[in-house]
Image 1 (cartoon, rainbow, N blue to C red):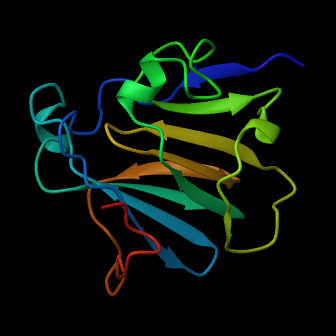
Image 2 (image 1 turned 180 degrees about the horizontal axis):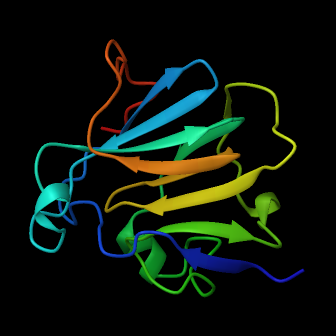
Length: 152
């Protein structure tokens, strides 16, 4: 089955220059925190931080591919993904044999697993989870920690 992309970041996005993504884990949820694009997001999504909540999270990873690598065809999806800097659901052939960066496993694989991909300026985030939601606030007590889950 051919690789297909569905753009999920319609009407909002991450800061194109310094999104500073990091991950927090809570039970079977993975939370991705990043700075919003203050120039193009609606007012309610342009301040503070934005959070993607991935429910039924099985695994995630940050990849070293950045915008320069993507445009120079060094990313496994360079000629397939419709555009750089967006959040996608990816279906079909994930071309996983082309990417050797290890996954961080967080739980059991859900029966209905989706593959998500977010192209940030200096790194890419991938996640396998059952669903996602965009939030403007994190739950109380959730910590976004350490170098393992934070791309510098």
